[in-house]
Image (tube, rainbow over all chains, first blue to last red; front, side, top):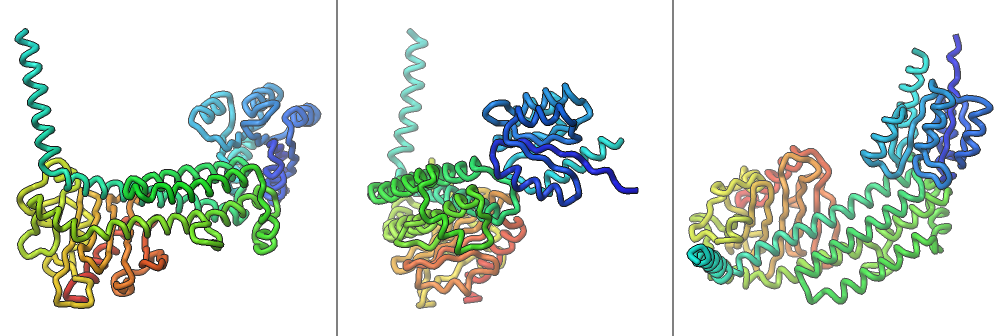
Length: 126
Length: 339
């Protein structure tokens, strides 16, 4: 039986992140959509929920923590992974306490993120 | 009233003690402080090399990074370089003006890179097809050229400036080799019987130098013990053309650290090592001037850099066991039996 494809949303206001992550994550056959603005991403999520949301923590209009809260309010089953260039214990603790599945610090290798996504996918199926 | 008198007496006693220490052996303390400062210089240079290595790894394109990473790399490099230049100026204050003029030039270049006034970007990208054409990677490529590209003139890249600074400092330190021997002798520091090495306990002798000579095994210094493990009779070779001439060494030691140098007017050899079994800290650094053939001394795996004044060599970011084995091997290679 064919394994169900994951729907992954990537939100980062730095264009390079989405541009590089999309092909890297699509390699495993998953569906990836990228956004540079949090509002547009949330509007898209309203139309169609995603299994996994990967979001940067520091963005100009809406930060990653707010996105995390709003996504989980819309869909509690969605796994939210926080990416940050400012990895601190406080940021990680706050994100995890608010329900983030995990976090990853920039710069990172796509394989490292893929490993987190694989864990998230396992939880979604269980 | 009585209390005030007792307190006054106590202060006087402390001042007397302090006076005794400061007047007794100021030279040895200065020598130990110079050793510590030189190690700080090495530590900051190591920090710069780590930043360069990180940038080189990231530029290959496997990583997801953003502009913040690149600007942080620039800021951290400028900061580390500044710390290194500060150490160099503490060691040799008369270099201050020259070194800070060059440092300011690097700070200006860093500012240009951050504000993207980077005319070489396109040229670099054409030269290296492995680098992604994304602006962040282009900027990173320019930063790496500034750090360690082909130097257009001496000191024009950060790493070349770092090497030049080392050579200047070492050259200056070595001009005082004769006066170091006088300083040691005038402070009653002597060599252990049968040894050609003055040995100082970095922390103890900086306060009150020992009147009795330390034997290499009296000080619990792991790197020194490793170095002498296979050496002939705890002695190191003269490293001079004239093998009959006995060379003099000075070792400044603490539990995990060893600073060793030869005290001869026409020969320059420095060895700095940390062996603590904590891999990120452990390293060996060697400087040997052009009179010494390091091929006979260095085991495999050393990074070497040639300068007009001599060779810089180091081994770091490797297993502690490798550092330990290398020290034993260097000791064996320096042994009079081997040479």
